[in-house]
Structures are given as structure tokens and as C-alpha cells.
Image 1: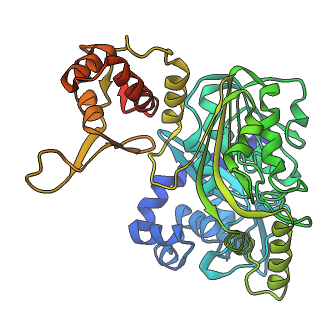
Image 2: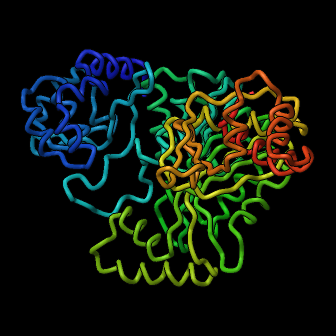
Image 3: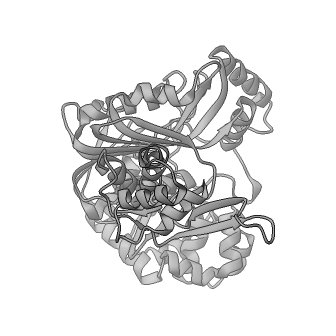
Amino acid sequence: MQESVVAGLRTAFEAAGYTVDGVAERLGEQANGALGRNETAPAFRRTGSGDALDTMIRLFLLQRPLPEALVNKVFAGIDLVALGIVETSGGEARAVLDIRPFAEEEREWWVVADPTPGLDGRREPMRSDYVLGIAPASLSLIHLTVPIKADRALDIGTGCGIQSLHLADRVNQLVATDVNPRALQLARWTAALNHIDLDVRDGSLYEPVRGERFDLIVSNPPYVISPPGGDLTYRETGYAGDTVVEQLIRQAPDHLTDGGWCQLLANWTCVRGEDWQDRIASWTADRSAWAVQREQLDPSEYVELWLRDAGLQGPPQYTSRYDEWMRYLDDQNVEAIGMGWITLHNVEGTLAAESWPYEIERPIGPHVLHRFERLEGLPADLTALHLHVADDVIQETTGQPGAEDPATIVLRRQRGMRRAEQVDTVLAGFVGACDGDLSTGQILAALADLMDRPVVDVLADYLPQIRNLVVEGFLDY
């Protein structure tokens, strides 16, 4: 896309107020909410003025045909047809691409992708080289990414380039890769439209960056576990099972600087007779890593989810494709599929893997970074630490009225993973005494004296639990 065309589009968008806030204000809460559910009728009713903003909303966000003359007037001097952004027929213009505003903190961007499928209940099979735009998964990865400054970063499977947009302000050199030529083109357009210097390369996994190292690698890869023959490049590959995720993780240390980070969204197979945590641990080897399973689906739920995503519910091939997919998973002894994220820190360590389907704070990236820092920075001996309770921790107790002691005591964090830890009265007493004045050893010694127990026994019982509370952010040092 030529610089003059980029400048013209930016100027048109800025002059019209075609931004996240501008669109939200024009549509109002109800229509904006409906559009978020892929329903365009309320937004169409509120965008009939014919001005530039209404025209852009109807053209790109509502995917409605518009008079060709109106589109030409709004984008005067820019040949959208020649660029492949709009197609015309019978005096009407219709968007071929989706160009929509995206905002993060104080930054405003525009993202170029293929049109959103499924508007107003219409659903047709997607083209094989479909390029996904701003989607819940891509936003999840943005929220997961650790907030570090980096010299070099790599975005594998960049798609429309949204991850690179997110990283641009804090990375000196950005490299983005994809195997889909259409994605490479649209990522370049997204970068150009937002004045982002992006090195876009063609190739699979780490092939385009052989011999190079990065401080940060992010990927929202085509992780869907499907039988051979799946032709949606943005979500499926020729790799068997969850091999694409496995290779991204196994090979990451060879492409990371010392202390570098690799973060990706992932699906993994839960094989009969195997522990999924052990499976991922074999990928991360001796590196410090954290895998969080946000959801686990049985094979039928999984197949239905992705057939629905591809718009294949209803056509005659639906049942045959369903059966083929189920047989494929059964042949691999898959009893469930895990869906979540994996973060690998390129330092020596082990994997922590857990299921956590509960609500979390967004963005979660700062918490991910702090958790690794606490885990990797804790000394072996905690007794000299002066701890204090994190600001977001509350204590909840339950029990019979008038009882001398509560039946249960729960410590709950309001931020990060928003964990809850059930503790006994001794550990609750310890936490209550953590104001930074006394050391861990001094507090435990005092509690041992109150309970008339040997200090060594109290240390053995409670130091592992205290370590966990520090790692999970209930206690700071």
C-alpha cells in the first residue's frame, strides 16, 4: 500500500472520528452491544445520516452495501476498488475487507482483516486463506503478554498483525511471520496504516528466523486439533494433534535470549491414561514455565465448537465431517482437549501446570510477570524474610454463631488470578502478623510458643504453605 494511500486513509478515518470512542458514541450503548453480538440492525438504524462516520460504520462494521457515489465521496481520491478493499456492482459498493478501529490504553489503531463472519445470523463457510481480525483469542493473548521492554520480539502466526500493534511501543525491532500470503499482506497494511515498522516474513514456525534470538516471542497459532484436510489456515495446520504447540514450546529456548519469554495460546490433547500436566512438562523440559488450562472440553463438545466456528452447521457435509473428526480423536486416544495458555521463561526451572476456569483480572500479563519474579527470586530459606500482606487480600470466615473458632477461613485475592486459599487458624494468625516488622522465623517461633509445639515442627508444617502464599501474591517481601 503506497504511503500516499495510507496517509489518505488515516486522514479520512481521523477526520470522521472513526475511532473506538467515536463509533461507540455514534451507536450508543444498545446498538454497540448488539454489534458485539454480531447483530447489525440497531446500529444500522443509528447510522443513516450519510456523513463520513456513518458511511464507514455501515461499510466496514455492518458490511452493508452502499451507493458507490457516497463511498467515493467519503474516500475522495482513494481508489478502494483497485486496492481490493471494496468491490462494486450495479452502482453499489461493498467492503471486501474489514478495517476497524482498535484502542488500547491511550493508543488508537486500525486493524485490516477479512470481514466478520456470522453477522445477523448469516453464516457461510469461510475462504481457506481467511484472515481473522480482532477476536476474543487475540485479545486474550494481548492481555496475557508480560509488560516488558524488549529489543527484539517475534510474532508467530501474525494474522492481521494485532499482536505486533500491541508490542510496537515497547519493542525496538518487531518480526512477524505467517504461512498465509493473504495474512502477510494484511499485516503489512495494518502496520503501514498505524506507522508501525514491521519486518514481515513468510514461513512456518521458526523457519523464517533460523539462527536468530528474541527477548519475547508471542503466538496465537493455528492450534485447532483436527483431522488432515482442514483448510482454514488461520486455525488449522498439517501437524498431527497438538504437535504445532509442542514444537513452538520445545524450540522456543533456541530462539530466546537468556531470560527471554515465550507466550502462546494453545490447545492440547488429554490422552487416556496420561496426565496432561506431564505431557506439557515434557515440552518445557528444564525451563521455568506456567501452563494454565482455562477450559477442558470432551471430544464432541470440541468438534461442535469448531464446526460451528467454521460455519459448517447445517450443510450436508456437517455430519460426515463430525464423524470423521470424532474418529480422528478416538484413534489418538483423546479423552478431552485442554484450552488455555503457556508461558515459558528462558531460565532454569520447572513447569507449574494447573486448571483455572475462574474469572481473572485483565490484563493478566503484569501478574504473570510478577508471579515468575516471585517464584524465581525466592530464597530457599524464608525465615529471614519480612513479609507483609498484599493490599488486595481479604479474609472470609464461616462457622456457627457463637462458636469459639470459625469452621473455615479463606484468604481471597481481588486481583491477578483472584485465587482463594483455605487456611487454618495458625496460618491465618501468621498472615495477620505479617506487617513487615517481624521476620517469618520470628512469627512462626512465637506461634510455636503459643501452641506449645517444637519450632522445628511448625517450620516444617507451615513454611511450604507460606512459600505458596508468597508465590501467589498473598504475601509480599
